[in-house]
Image: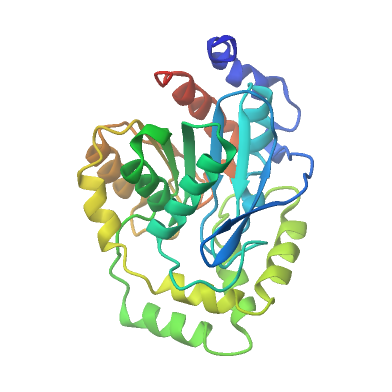
Length: 298
């Protein structure tokens, strides 16, 4: 309870840090693994006795996408765990199910394994749906969710966009195709260590089975997750969206739709793209820390 009482100091942590605009990074930690059904889920853990925050990256990325938020959450007294989703990072490449719901169940398995729940679950992109599924299937284990650049419903891509995806994933250039798209998700500024992160992601996607898993994920419908949103108004949630997120024709409108569905006021980060928490952590972290501090303890 003492750490929760200090939570509003999150903003001062950022303002006092000279690295606030340069995306502070957490020191590396040893990868741990949890066997879940047909594979292993990779994760790292800051440890400690503070309230648990579990962060899930989006498809086509690694758990290191939380490297800017992780140290700030840890400094504020939280135990921070980041995991790689199915098919990505150090998690097994091959699974029979890559859905947001399946990844949400992996998150719940990890919370149970750690014995440190309930947790606040962060989810980026498609993994925002995973956070919602985890809260839906085990509400006692999820105190609240933070949805970052959330993609929780199907869009209406043009025939040209569909063709571009088919061609992009259809040949030996597919890793380069994905990385070009990934680069576009940071429209205003890139983190200081962006080149290193890109190299690590490229190396991972070249491993056997990784791009096949990503292609499967890209093609999955989110209709079940969209239906879930309608019944989640009771769930404590924070929606964070960059105003220049290229995944949406109108990112602000998408954030408002989701915020209204969940009964919460979204945080719109001016100029940020699909990774507002990494591109502009100084704008995201204070609201994030305040949101977590305001959650009722369980």
